[in-house]
Structure formats: C-alpha cells, structure tokens
Amino acid sequence: MTDNAANSDSPAAGVATKTAADELVAGILKRDRRTIAKAVTVLESLSTEAPDLLQSLQPHLGNAIVVGLTGPPGAGKSTLVNALIRDLRKDHLRIGVIAVDPSSPISGGAILGDRIRMTAALDDDGVFVRSLSSRGYLGGLSPAAVRIIDALDAAAFDLILLETVGAGQNEIDVAEVADIRIVASAPGLGDDIQAMKSGLLEIADILVVNKADREGAERTLQQLKGALSIRSGRQSRVPVVKTSALNGEGIAELIAAIQSESAKVRAIDPLERRRRRARYLIARAAADLVAERIKSGGTGLIGKLADEVLSGKSSPSAAALRILDA
Ligand SMILES: Nc1nc2c(ncn2[C@@H]2O[C@H](COP(=O)(O)OP(=O)(O)OP(=O)(O)O)[C@@H](O)[C@H]2O)c(=O)[nH]1
Ligand SMILES: [Mg+2]
Image (cartoon, rainbow, N blue to C red; front, top):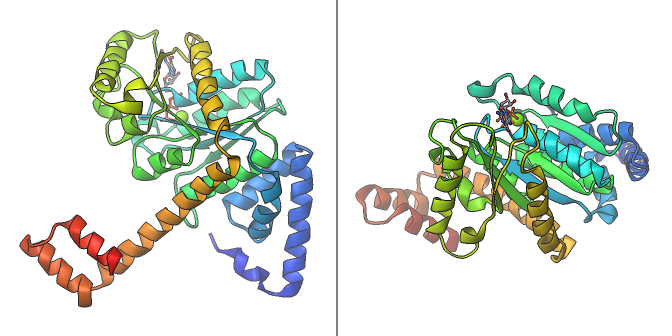
C-alpha cells in the first residue's frame, strides 16, 4: 500500500480531491449505500481524497455510539452481531458494523464465515458491514477503524458495532476506541476465565457469556461473577449477561444493557468522546515513536539508563519516567 496523500501536494490535485471529497460527503449525508462503501474504502486505504474527506466529515459527526465487541476467538462474536442486528433493526436503529477479521489459526475460516453470516442484512439499507483484515494498514489498524467510524457516523448510523478478537494488543486497542465495550466469552474455549485475562476483563462495560445453550455456560457465568466480585468500584458492577446468539436467548437483556450504557455515553459531550479517540491515536503514535527512539539510542541518557537497568540500579519504569521528564 502506498501513501497517495503525497500526490495531493500540487494545487490542482488539491482542488480535485476537495471536489471528490465533497461529492462523497453529499452521498454519505443522503445515506447512499454505494457512496458510503466508497468513502469507507477511501478511508480504509488512506487514498488521495482521505484527508479532505475526513475534514469535510467533521461538521456531521457525534451522533453514533461505538460499541466494541471483543473476546476470545470462537466466542460467538460475529453470531452475536448478527443477532443484535436482527433485534435492533426492529426498532429501526441504523447499524454499522466494522469486523476486524481474526487471523488466528483457530478460526482461519472466519473471514468468509463473517461475511456470510452478516450478509443476511446486506439488502437492508439500515445496515452496513465492512470487514478489515488484520494486516497491512498504513499507520495501524486502529487508526483505520477510527477513520471509518467517522464515515459511518456521518452516514447516520446510530450504533457502530466494532468486532475484534481479544487476542493481541492491537485488537484490544481497537476496542478502546469504543464508547461501550462488550467482552464476550463462552464455555468450552479451553481456559474459560484464563481466556478472558490479558486485560479483557478490565476494559469491559458489559460481559457476555455466550453459548448459553451449551453445557458449562452456568459455570463460566459463575466464574466471571466470582472474578468480578473480588474487584472494586466500577468493575464489580459490570453486568454479566448470558446469551445464546444461535437461538436468541438473552439478546433482549444484552440490548437493554447496551441501552443503559448508551444513556451514560449520551450524557458525555460528543466532542469529548471524539477527542478521547484522537488522544488515543496520538498516544499510540507517540508510544511507537518513543519506543523506536529508545531502542535505537545507544549513547547519552538512554545509554546510561540502559546500563542502570542492566545492573538493577534502576527499574525499567523509573528509567522510562526519567526519559519522559528529560
Ligand atoms: N451452540 C452455540 N454455538 C454458537 C453460539 N454462538 C455462536 N456459536 C457458534 O460458534 C462458532 C463461532 O462463532 P463466531 O460467531 O464465528 O465466533 P467469533 O467469536 O466471531 O469468532 P472469531 O471471529 O473467529 O473470533 C460458530 O460455529 C457459531 O455457529 C451459541 O450461542 N450457541
Ligand atoms: Mg467473528
């Protein structure tokens, strides 16, 4: 993938991309499905019109609520998305879906699977689904997802469901850009609770035990409740919902939990919610840059601190703080 944005340096190219961006925005505001798809592709691949498009979208943002749905591979996230779409459409809510395809070997076939399951809604103008592959994004997967959120927000989707596998940090990060975070688990994934570790429990606003129709669901539910009960503050009050995405059990309760969280999100200034996403993107970029500098810097302060960490005189965090304060 190349960064075509560099081509827009000449004044003529600037005018052309501005016009192209305005046309895209006009189509998005009319909720034209093909234009939305085109705009999403422009933002996904950061093509020439992307910077102008992002700017032109700004006055039309702030309505959508982004719901991150994450959890171990095979927990039933895509099936849950499908079940949620089915029920939410009964209330005429417009639903956008960004599915970050898993690359895990456990569910290697899921890319096609997700498309097939979700295409049930493809002739419905109130639903838009885009799958993103986990690799090859200029500037990273999370920034690509955040850009796409803007296009779907302007296209008046009320809820944007962001499905990611809670496996690597990048995927958890994607869920961090959400206004509401749902973490799904299911019995029989091996290490039930273990699978929820690596920070997943901590980020959840709503916990789901899916596959309620399977043996062991009640045990997983009790394990999760047990894990929450020893936590304090907000985490101890996180609702745990048992669902069967296959037969629809518990989906109404899950939607009620989402609505209850949405009410809290609506009380926050939309600009502040978008600023949080921007801060997150800057923090990510900063972390990458700082790490690169530190890893390549062998002399000066960094070299001295490396020796101190090596000898046990400084801890890595104490050394990091000294670099930030320098
Ligand atoms: N019995 C039962 N099976 C389910 C349920 N929900 C999903 N499944 C099945 O579990 C398998 C995985 O479902 P997916 O929806 O692809 O799971 P996922 O979490 O999206 O998986 P990845 O995207 O690969 O991480 C599929 O075979 C589903 O049919 C459920 O409630 N009950
Ligand atoms: Mg999936």
